[in-house]
Image (cartoon, rainbow, N blue to C red; front, side, top):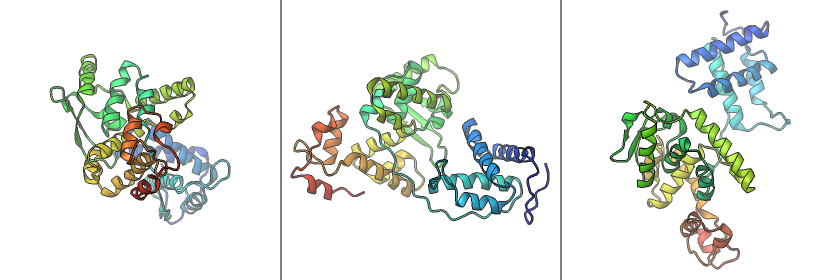
Length: 322
């Protein structure tokens, strides 16, 4: 591996040199446990190859200019989120290959989290094969993500109490969840057939199965909105249900979501309030957004719950803060 000086970036001589440097970056990150799975590795490699294709990847100045003016394939300016992701990949490359790179200051505004409806969530989950039904139900009821679920061992499950302990990944704390009687019972049957140390499927397989089911059901039911629901949105759904049914307490919701900072929770609440509102169209059969959401969760069609131009419209809207 050539020594790369920080004061005078080395011009790339050929693709082999670039690929060696990219491979060295990936190995370095693996040694530091910064890559969770193969998907992370593939994404990182793809981003670095993209930079190498359009710049001298060993030149931080060229890389910085490319990242700052990065555009989508159709020529439209890329979002700040994409630029930040691309920049973080290059930061790892620079650190692994002894290059001096100073980050561009890019303002990032996270999108409001998608909160899927109970109807759409259950359309997908109820179509899952037995091996995936119980894992999906656990994720629907708790704020456990797919990799966190995969990391759960037999010792972290209390069948008698119906509880699951989870070790947080990313910016999540550890936690314990009490399952509903129905899900706890499903879990007992599931564990009787899956006695391996880590009984739940790999995160990648969970994601692939979720994508397969939603694609099939969206086509069968002519419901393209199902395609927008990612497996990670089950965490958003669980947080929304907790917030709306447990006193709308941000601190309690923070603990449920296992956030380290309240700011993270408040960001989720934007999505929860948007989900619960439908603010300007509350019909006479309900008087609050919470009652409207409850009816929808019970299976009522939205058009039967919401109507335009009702006397409650301004009153309800004034109580909802985004």
